[in-house]
Length: 286
Length: 137
Image 1 (spheres, one colour):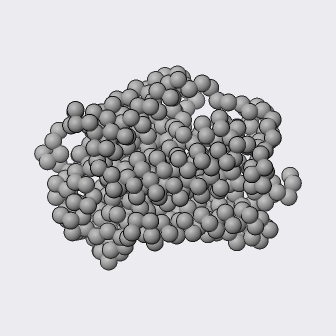
Image 2 (tube, each protein chain N blue to C red; image 1 turned 60 degrees about the horizontal axis):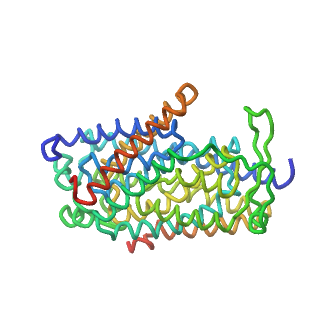
Image 3 (cartoon, rainbow over the protein chains, first blue to last red; image 1 turned 30 degrees about the vertical axis):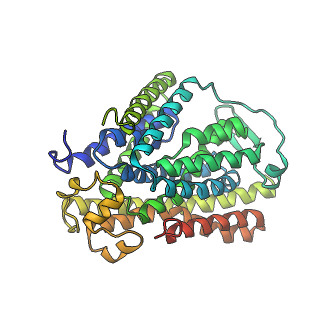
């Protein structure tokens, strides 16, 4: 359907429906919705990539803000772990946002396509979560007291945890923040492995803390888009409302949906959207 | 529970309470403002019917052709529905800053100076972002 022919209200409605579906799939797939939202909307909707990336940041921000209070109260998110890493990430994310808004659209589309396809392959090949067991904090982690505990009902036990490789963690979150700001992604797909595989936080703490980190990092980068005029309410608000509703449904479906099916769906959608962004950026399929 | 864990629990609860309240308020405001926008109850500066001609343009070209403001210029246009919605977007983007501003004194009160310094540094980064320092706005 041509953007010039379709009535304006078709697009916010379609955006709401797509965001609703992404909200469900993102929760089931354990990924941030931004990594699906940006390539899908950039490839199949008439909005310019500048506005899609701005909406993508607010989209990821909205979902994580809504989940934050629960994650903090059940101690799945740890402020002690989050605060230093989010600080590194948010400085890098504003740099990414500034760079992104000064790059050519074709170069950004191409880079986005490559990134999303690479992430889809990584998700497909990734192994199960890493269980660190008992590890010792490194000196920096000990100084920042990056440790905590939480009640795990499924294990019927209180889990004490601590992290290590703190300096590498700062580097990883700097890089993740930059990419998030550049492409308008929440980057949960990278936060969780960085916290779990690199820094050895338990998976539940990694997932919970990742959400809180996204809410802090995206709060910084979103202002760059807002000040540059790249936040369009007609695009951003239906996306926010759709993802909030979809996430709630997704959370209810989580218990009954086979993880392998969800993973296949997520990978297929990312390959399709990432491939489309790549071809569009290269001028092959405009 | 040790003293450190008690401090963590107290600060996390303060952050969670403010996050919960501010997020609910910002989302409610966004929903109302959007309904006012798309229903036409509050007029917009750029008619909704005209928007499809411009939303496919790069942001610089969009601003040039529509005369939409960058930086804080939208504050002068809050009578228009799209800028009322932008103000609600700004509220969503400022929730984290409010939470951090609230936990700085809480952390200082508990003697957690290193955590307070980190929180203060994050407040400065967020304030710089809000001010438009990074965007040149």
